Image (cartoon, rainbow, N blue to C red; front, top):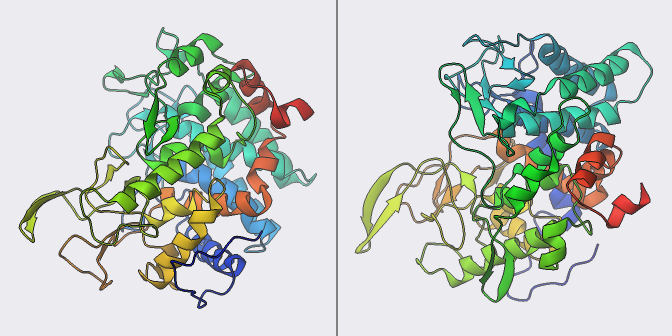
Length: 446
């Protein structure tokens, strides 16, 4: 695919062509899912900080990443099968119950699990959205590994059983919309996925498409009725501040040219919406209303990310508030000058004409990728006065699986539509989309 040269950016050639740059970035980022997996359970750590538990959302991304690894020849099919088989064996046989140290309950799983035992970590919640991200990865490997040998047969059997076991009706907690989660100490959390656009798009498709415990479409319609279109920088779009909201569901579902009732009224699909949100983020950085360092046409990307830590500092006569790990957003904040290069990469399918140049700038001007460090630094704040290993600004000392997965998956979707094509074969996703009222596009060819 050819992209016009932006004359405002000096030609940079150290990364080679765009394809060479993406191939290198993807290969290095993929290493996370090889190095950070437990040898017994197969669980993948939430981040590289020593002693950190596994995130089930990261495990879901890792499963789809292993598919990509096979296709890109980052690992053999045999190795990928062994890794996937190990993970699914663990979840299929892990304890489901109301006990505080179980792995899951009602087919759902706790947000964080101890790496070596798979038991609940940090007294965290049984998470509906993170279980959805896990299930998306599980369904992707069930479709991809279609061989007749024992291991691939078991992968398909266990994957189907795990999805069928999720009791989405229970997660309604007696209502129409899905609860954020549950914990054994106090029951359901006081929040539901019922207000404003979010990554729950994927969650609702999985809950609607279930062959065993499906929810009714009314809850989805109640949720989408709360969606708000805003006009920002002369762009009308369905607002959500952090970029990850515009990306996560799109890792597995190809929303191009398919529309539900909200889309038909709005006049654009969710893919187009993510494209518009990407351009809004870039324009916000160009406007740079708070005058942060290095913001501009090639310095943008606000999302849920690590940060330099909670503090209020006076810098050049101006008070600046900084944060740790929070969901940053544009254009209405919060914003403390922290940008995340991985979030730019995850917008690649939506807006390659601006993303590719920004990736190159992050590598060659900001020095945010080191060849021995599993891809991009998680986040970068050049306004914060402390400089760590990067003279251009503060960088996070850790790598996060939730950052690595979207990079690997979205590069593959941009280049070959790899995960999208795989999931277009998933009957459960198709059923969920149709029950939600989607039509048009590739759904008409099924």
